[in-house]
Length: 146
Image 1: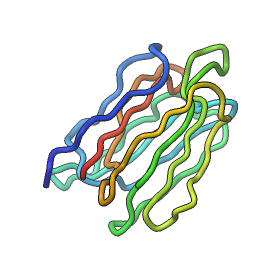
Image 2: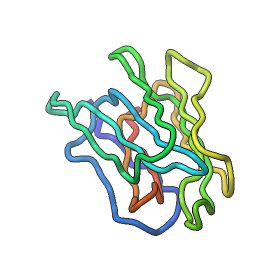
Image 3: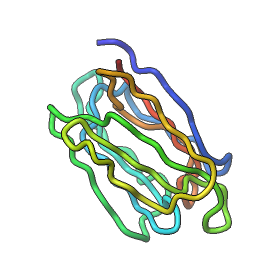
C-alpha cells in the first residue's frame, strides 16, 4: 500500500498541533460536533499495522454531534468547508464530507469565511486527519491514499 500524503491544513493558527498515532490505512468513523462553527472532531482509523486507533476529540463536544460510520467498502471521497470567525476565534466554521456509498455530503457547522476543498482524485480516499485545536477545531488537514 502506498504511503498517505498530507494535504493542508486549512484554518487558523490557534490551538495545539494534532496528528495521528500511526500511519493511517483506512478511516472507520468520523464524529463532528458543530454549532456556529466546528467545535470538535474525533475519528477512528485502521493503521498500516491493522490496529484500530481513536483520535480526539480535537476541540470540544458541546453542540450537535453527528457520526459517519464507514464499513470496509466505504470511504471518504470529498471534503470541503470554510474557515473564518466563529465564537470570536479563527477556526474551521463548516465541513462537508461525502463518502463513496453516499454521494450527498453531510454538512456541519455554518459556512462562513474562506472556502477550501480538499481534492481527492479518482480512486483516492481520505484515511485520516491532522490539524490544530484548543477549545475548538482551529485547522484541519487530511491524509489521502491514491
